[in-house]
Amino acid sequence: MNPKYYRRQIAEIGIENMVIDVSSLQKAMETMSELDELEKVLNHIKFNLRTDIRNLRVEYMQMIQEADGLINKRSLLGRKKTIDDVVRKKKALKKERNTNIAAYEIIENLINDYLKQIDESRLYIKNHIQMKVK
Image 1 (cartoon, rainbow, N blue to C red):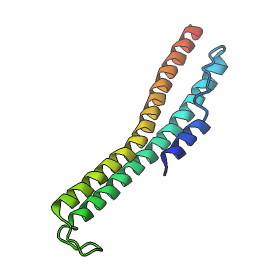
Image 2 (image 1 turned 30 degrees about the vertical axis):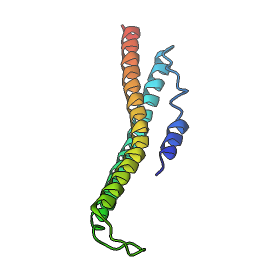
Image 3 (image 1 turned 90 degrees about the vertical axis):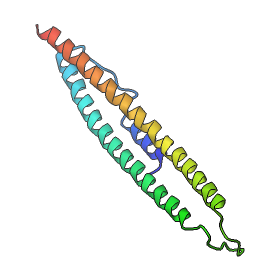
């Protein structure tokens, strides 16, 4: 899937607009439930994202291995592919792979930041609930 698809998914779950409401015990518990649900969704998105990254790596690995097989083969114009041609092709493929994967890794870092914020918010809510119960 496209990295934009994952960005859209993250935007749709509404994590940016979430408010941590601990004004009452009930609202604090509801907020805790929302955080748990958001965490599940983010972990699911992260799993799919990691799967796409793995698939991209495999795809590019196959293309790079295919480039190795081009040495001394004739091109459409009848010219043999030299080692330099193959090295240039492999470098271009690696650069393209790294660029494509970087877009996914940016989203993965965003998800990791959200998960960290959820953990911190959960801790804040637990401490607030304990103070109210005492």
